Image 1 (cartoon, rainbow, N blue to C red):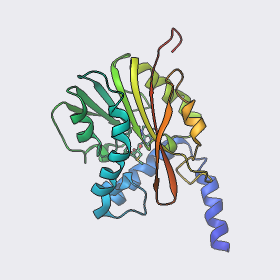
Image 2 (cartoon, rainbow, N blue to C red):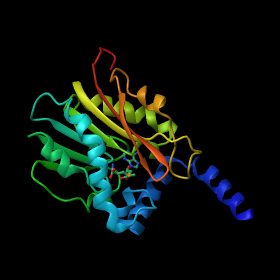
Image 3 (cartoon, rainbow, N blue to C red):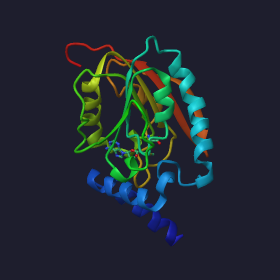
Image 4 (cartoon, rainbow, N blue to C red):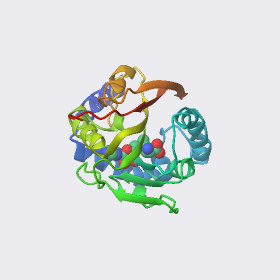
Length: 224
Ligand SMILES: C[S@@+](CC[C@H](N)C(=O)[O-])C[C@H]1O[C@@H](n2cnc3c(N)ncnc32)[C@H](O)[C@@H]1O
């Protein structure tokens, strides 16, 4: 009973941590868990490939049907160990760029042709404006606090070309926020990126939690 109360108190306190502390959290997590750091803690090391394959099957078919041309420049935002990058590299004949604020996760990523990795510093994506055809985000935004989310969205809107595709995968379970994760519902994510017409195209479960796959296309206006 007391243990439960202390745990709840800790979660409440930790969910208000400033973002630098959240990055320290990811650094520590990467150090402790290695490749497993990017998955739900309840998964085991030997399951990583199978979980990734399962997720790819839940996401890619819905994205593929929206791809109209080759030679896309793809941004994997919050790529972690880059486990989706080989799949993204095969998707079109273009270039894939993975960015993440945690260097030790990027160090674990497989180096491939037509793939570059960059460290994300102060939330600034080191890419030109209007340079991305496809923005891929899997299970990243839940790790970003409410206060930092608008500047993150603005930065991603900046790098996307007009007509860019966006594929967003987030945990949309109705759950109280955890220490380093903010649970937001489907409608919130659908409306997060202006003029992208994000639509929930699929959902799957990871343990007891609902993960939603959104796909949309950006129509840039003078303001966006
Ligand atoms: C659950 S992991 C998912 C990683 C990867 N997308 C995947 O699915 O394998 C969350 C990732 O978000 C990254 N991250 C944390 N804060 C971030 C931020 N403010 N901006 C971008 N990425 C961030 C973490 O370093 C970590 O790699």
